[in-house]
Image (cartoon, rainbow, N blue to C red; front, side, top):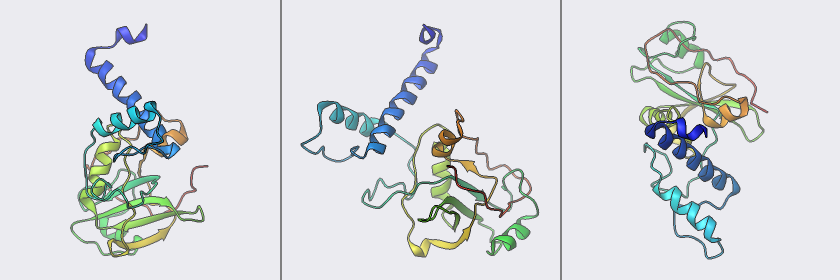
Length: 202
């Protein structure tokens, strides 16, 4: 009954959201594929794979579409740190934040991925990959759950213990915390970043 009250655009967005939930569940079960279907798949699994191939997301560097064999990363969240676009709530100036992080205050800024080490401890990976991270955040704010492939060692400038906060939460983190939508990402100018670590979600 509630569906009849939705406008057509709202209904289509709701159906897309439910479709992505189905595709994400298939991915978590380990049989989702964007390539040729293995012969052992059931007709239902084949249909879900075809739905996944048709659903579009905003592509970005390192999203795994060009080389799907590379392992994907599970992120708790991400931070874009730039001289004129520092997340709200971070203390200090851009140079001060960079000094705390142990990196130079370069004009292009930094991308920071908050994730977990193999031991389960929270770590932050500081990278120069601005475009790819912005593309990933663009997907998250539209409710599209995508993650980057594991970066090559040459792409990582520094790895730190703990998470850089405040961050834009991934959809994985929003589910863990029981939040219906990810926190909005907006590269608006403001003050700066904190290097304090927080614990990984249970």
